[in-house]
Image: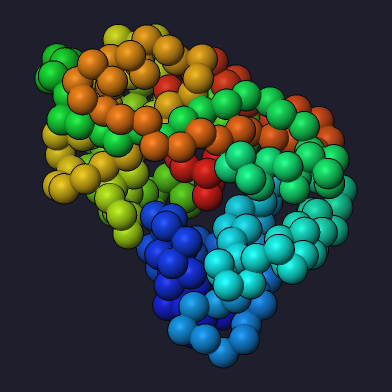
Length: 260
């Protein structure tokens, strides 16, 4: 419910995650959620789902307040999410190392890994420019091909929250966060395009920023590290049912584990 958004965001902050109320609101608008509420300033535990048609759905926001962990709340909420998405060809999520063990017991399997990096200001790369209205058809088509399903409302919400950039063969969106801006998704056919839009996006963001880089994009990771970026935490993309239908080779940075 809308009245729960401040306490949902408080839970994110308490467990050290980056979501703000607007991220939580996306699940009210495009998906659904379940919460355990014990009347405290932060919700006790949460989970949320977003459906992307019949072929793909995302489970997210599986959070438990630290004082209530190891009581089965995460498993119970995951079972609710799986039941809510029954009939979907692929149910996917992005797992922390601790969450991965819970999800494996529920039948999820590993697909590929990525890691969160602090994002330094990067050397400028020519050819990136701000996103224009005329760019949206190509951006939406590129993201759908990489991610595996269309998600126009979410991407347009990101573009309203932070500057977005395009280059030949790629684009980068971003959004604000509780602990720093998040760059992503970044879709690029090669590392040159990815570097151009990543550098432009970072230069446009004030304060701290993070980016979630696929393990397969090792050259991008090395470039960020050489500029002063630091590794923060790993994640694993997992699926129940069929594989995620998109082309992961085109993903230079995910939108974040909240949204895939």
